[in-house]
Length: 351
Image (tube, rainbow, N blue to C red):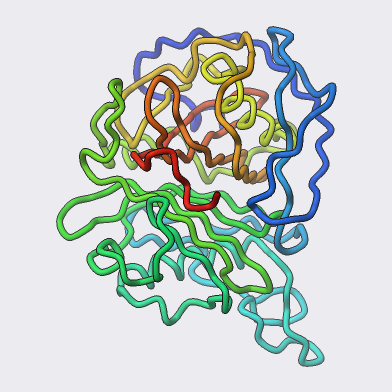
């Protein structure tokens, strides 16, 4: 695992940042629009700064002890090979199981398969095969739109690569992926929320060249996301002795956002941060803590793979950009941070 999480480049980030996460965060019911629950007297970082915020509200199906689900292929976009059946013989899409009752269990296989199904429908330009709730909400780049009718949906090809987390507690899957639009590969982010094996929320960020215009922005490099993936081992299961708790994963992302740029703690010396695949930055420069950063709108966590992802509006020294950060943690350290962001004038589409 250690070899899988080391990069083959020369790195600048100092190692040895201390990390102490001892939040006791409670997942409460509600939708993804609920704010991240505040942490009173929560965990402190190595600099003694309380980690602001905590777990966001848990939504969707019940937590499951299901299988971990297969890693997505670098080409073709498939993970577990489709949606598997839930326990008791019921179909993951709500088919009849033992006794004829529909399954509502949220499993890793269900989430993995639904994301594969989404990418297949995207490539075909036809969402009619997806199990959509009657009131499903779809956004692309902070705009609420009709699913399947955007330029990207009409011109997307087969997914070339995806890195994904499976959150059975909130019954959601989030991914960063590389998908061609006509002849141009684009970095994209996807969040799917599931209730009763149906898609109720679909949030997407599509970053075309020139879509991120902060003064310090770097050019997108989708190929770099693919090239570095094996070194990071996004889909490697973290050994139980090195596994972060759900609360620790959520707290790390929340503190990263709310104390930015001074809340980046417990990063390894090899940790690098990419922005839309571009750049080669140290993961963070300070663990001193603070406030005045960004609001954590949605945070998802996958303890098995050691991945957390957060959605926010990034407005540090710039206008607001829709932002999805994904990080990989094991052994008490963060080994990679990838951001996917673009201009949206401070809007998320989920206000």
